Image (cartoon, rainbow, N blue to C red):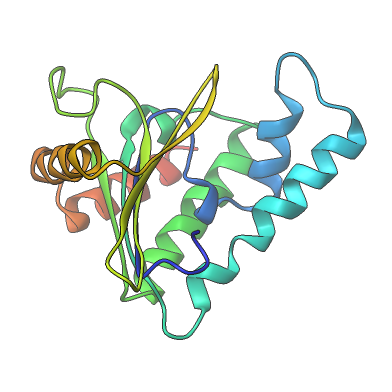
Length: 179
């Protein structure tokens, strides 16, 4: 669905969103999974995640808007250098892609609209809105308009509560510099 969506938005609490993950970060993420994946499973997941990067450069590009919890910018999957490279890659994308907006939800915001967990929102060419939610128990695609509309509204509140894109870039750059 990501490949066809006109708009892709998301809120991530634990990790850098998959669309923006470097190969090393993705590999470290899957290698740290409990219970452990086999080498073949890790490779399949890494390649699948990297194939998703085509969404970033397709023509016409989708509008991308992502919110990331500050804690995800500090989780050192694969060690400090892997995280530093990941943060620098994210900053590079933010500077290059004018159809991408990234905002950070600071840890100091103890109460905000995203406390129920991560989600990914998509709008199709046909004007259909969908929400994809992942959890430990599995994944759910939400398509009922009354539920989807509420989650789109919630995402709007999250954007208003997060740092601006410029403040977010400064914070990401500071965190990369500390590694």
